[in-house]
Length: 64
Image 1 (tube, rainbow, N blue to C red):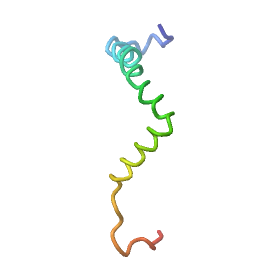
Image 2: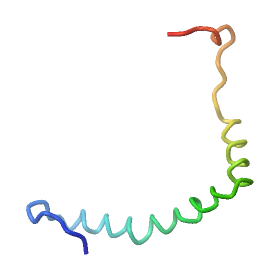
Image 3: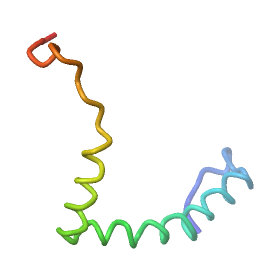
Image 4: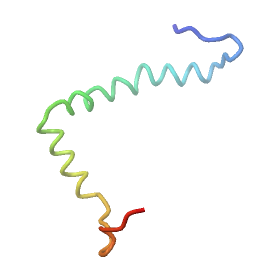
C-alpha cells in the first residue's frame, strides 16, 4: 500500500494504479531490457528511421 491523502481517496483511482503496478509495468520490462542489447536497439532505430517523414525539396536550408 502506498501513502495518499485521505481527502483524495478514490477506489477507481486505486484500481487503476494497481493495474499499472501489477500488469503494465511488468509488460514493459522485456522491451526495456531488450533495448539494452545494441543489436536490437540498432534494428529498432533502422525501422523507425523508415517511418520518419521526409522534408519537402527546397526546405532543407530554411531556418526559423
